[in-house]
Length: 50
Image (tube, rainbow, N blue to C red; front, side):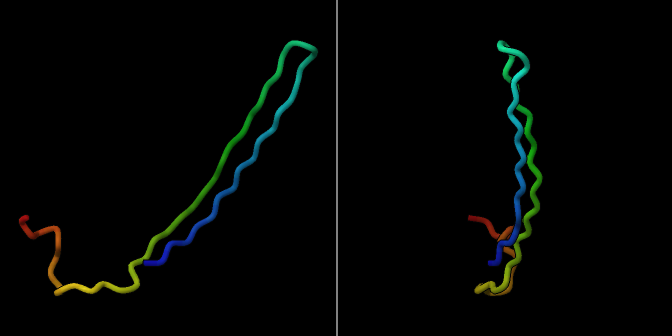
């Protein structure tokens, strides 16, 4: 299994006058996963009953 991705987070904190504090932020991310090897009998495990 190979997992790759990235994440970006930005945040700003400020103050208006003496009484008001604020913060604003956001994040952006992307990820992918890839099965690189599977050791099985070739059948679909979703079709097997337990």
